Image 1 (cartoon, helix red, strand yellow):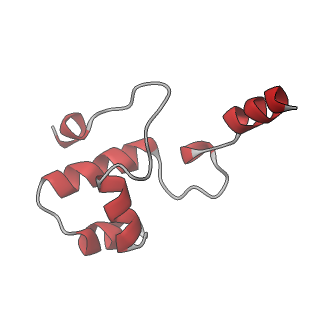
Image 2 (cartoon, rainbow, N blue to C red; image 1 turned 90 degrees about the vertical axis):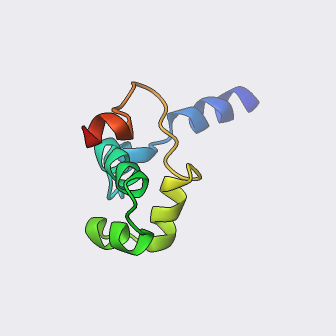
Length: 79
């Protein structure tokens, strides 16, 4: 049933709620702030224990789209 499928997809654990998540919302905000401050992807990745590709995806908003309760922006974290 399509209704059940839609409800199941919405209830999946994503982001930091996922059991395998390495990063929190605050980590993601710090990653984006580091990049805005001029850090390179390799340094960001090394700092957080992730691949440089994942760091790039986070910084370009292709991964870790923050939905739900508002988290701090990268500028707020940097301040």
